[in-house]
Length: 480
Image (tube, rainbow, N blue to C red):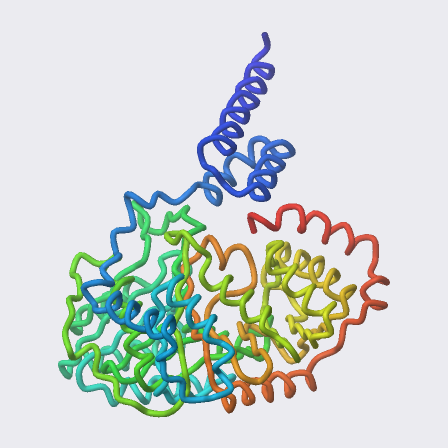
């Protein structure tokens, strides 16, 4: 036997072992299993390496010990609201929201997401305005600042945020910063040291054993949260970096959606931060009234819904599907990536075929090529069902927004793709308010002015090369 034959035989043997492990031990869903088997079949050596980086299943037993919701008073409040919905005694401020009680119920049972109805919400679609407001609110902090971001860069914006955190920490404000180690892999260790030396605490989510060598591509904390003095909360799509201010020439203007919230929903955002922080840090945050210091501020109903690979259910995806199923007039969606699974695709297809005005807006340029062409593949199916598709032309569209019938909406960190639904940790605000939903509709309508419409006729005229890229991307979409 030649050396080449021996090596080839060994590769095939390990490929077979890995394939058997994927099928019988990992218990992945069928589409993901077939996608990985295809990768192993067509690119044996490289496919094995890709699987080690992207495909390994998360070990819940070793990592996730953060279910301390009962200690934070969440379980008791959830049970009270569930009983109130069951016996019809839950008071709903807006009469037009009564038909959505089953959506409230879903999030309560699925994610312990308490419904609050005393919130004020400010919508940001421009990065400069969002960060101006955030930094200004941090400068006014007197007790604590909690930040959780997937990406924090050491650039001009990152330095502005860091300088504010350092200043406040030196003033005695308790500052905690949690960042994702993969998303913020370029974050300067010198900057982290500066913030820590000022008295702040800084932690990384899922850091590697060897610094700068992180192979855990999946299971990242994609959430973006900021809580100030337990009274003000920020949630949405903007990370901390100059590109989110439109300074990246490749992407140009960055169109995103972010919310500033005041009211009881901030308490639910605080709980989410505490749970994530206690997982990542050896210095747990224990319950104190100072962290739950919100005051009634408006009349917007909100449920803060989280999802991730530590969950049995795909909470945010279920919320999206339920919203779509309630639609009688329209569903407006903005997302940078559109790779739905069969359940979500069917919900949108059925809505469009039923006469609901389904409109989807996606960016005109890729930041991940395979994801971009897979998006076009799925978009084509909805065009055939009668949906309207818009391609945003004024820079890069990164917003994750859904609005239904001018009554309910969702804004947060979850894209419409498998990665957001199953592989990453996400958080969304589900919003119940006619005025706020109308504002988001107006933003969508304004964005149409900077978009081109992709019709079914134009889609069918795409080149063979584009069709080929769509087909390949579609095949591997369950693992993108």
